[in-house]
Amino acid sequence: MPNKNVLIVDDEPAIREMIAVALEMADYGYWEAGDAAEAHSIIVDHRPDIILLDWMLPGTSGIEFARRLKRDGGTADIPLIILTAKTEEDNKVQGLEVGADDYITKPFSPRELVARLKAVLRRTVVAGMETPIEINDLKLDPVCHRVTINDQAVAMGPTEYKLLQFFMTHQERVYTRGQLLDQVWGGNVYVEERTVDVHIRRLRKALEPNHYSLIQTVRGTGYRFSTKAA
Amino acid sequence: MPNKNVLIVDDEPAIREMIAVALEMADYGYWEAGDAAEAHSIIVDHRPDIILLDWMLPGTSGIEFARRLKRDGGTADIPLIILTAKTEEDNKVQGLEVGADDYITKPFSPRELVARLKAVLRRTVVAGMETPIEINDLKLDPVCHRVTINDQAVAMGPTEYKLLQFFMTHQERVYTRGQLLDQVWGGNVYVEERTVDVHIRRLRKALEPNHYSLIQTVRGTGYRFSTKAA
DNA sequence: GCGCATCTGTCATTAAAGTGTCATACTTCC
DNA sequence: GGAAGTATGACACTTTAATGACAGATGCGC
Image (cartoon, rainbow over all chains, first blue to last red; front, side):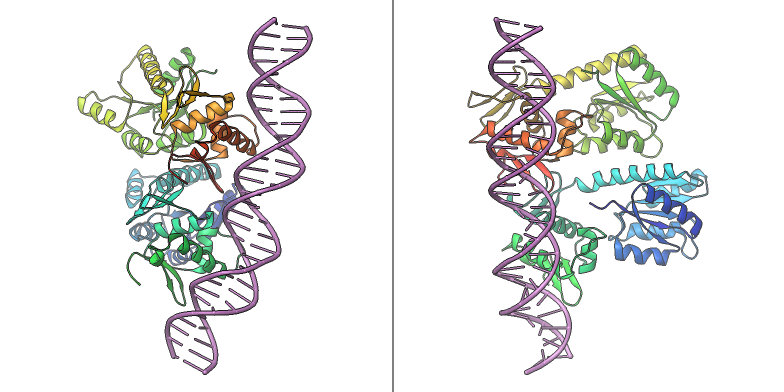
């Protein structure tokens, strides 16, 4: 399994570079963004596992950007660490209020950065992965790694399970095949986009016959998980 | 057998130190954590036998942290003692509601601390290790160290016994081979992960023919003990 | 201390399940 | 009707797990 991917948002290339090196050493993948707009497109396209966000950004301020991220259902669940030069307790509180998972004041050592990052990831993985997700009579329980319909176990392969888990945690939203490959297969895999179709079919088959239409085809775009009729 | 290991969570180094000395005298091992994040990584990495948690913590409050621990299936069964300066009955109730096993108000003497700690450990050990566990006609009695099916003794090796005991006390949950090695073999052993497969097979064989499917393979992940059909 | 019996961990082999790709059939939209 | 986009079944290949065998370790009784 590929390691976690981090999005670094900071307007100073030197700092980004410093962080990038630290992450590389710790075997994390990463993207870099210099402003909020750039950051936003990376988030939409790649869905990083965690975001390191500088408090001070040109244009939209970091804090405003954080607020936006946490308000949007599609990104609210991405863990967020705020970086700042300010040491006032005030900002710390404000940062955590916005929904940041941690708060690091500059200057910080690479060791500290990685340690906190690990801690946050570990914490959120537990929090996010432990709750069963239920949609009507379809239930996915990550704890026992099992999918049931009316308490009847449903058999499916590992990929279909991951796919379903992703869909159930990201309902009512289209994903392109490329995005699904990124999210479900994991970033750097070389797989035909059409392969997604096949796994979609396998998943639909597993949910047959009553839940076939939960996974809807969006012609020309990709797929969507939705409880509403297409 | 090495003595029990305690995790001390308190933001004041002086208090941690005081507790540490007391524990050392009583021949306990310990780790120290200054905040919730640090505590969490220690718990995940080392699985202490008991946690001493200060009510007041920077960032995540102690009580919130306790709630989180007790909600997560993986940590809910670690005994927890809450430390606090507050003496109001209110907090005590709240603390115990969260699932704490005991509650100590500061200031406390090292003697009191150790006494309560021992009591809690004794209690939970008794609760966890002395009660026979019964699942349908399969019974495991820790006291006489015996497994029976319909009162017919079932023969198995020590490792299989421990494995079964672990599974029976942690049903309906997937475990990776790595986790099983940690939990059943004990932390720092260097054993091939595939070895787990072999012991799983030996255990299954022992439970043949009627209970073979209690231990289910979760392909790509690990194993699960479950009474429900796969 | 010795010998027997049991238990353990590892390996090689076999069996099973899952994966990605393709060719073909089917839909939809213009 | 034709072009583009999807669905589907088949299949070769890869990955993962089950199994049986075995040699060293361990423990026990004598």
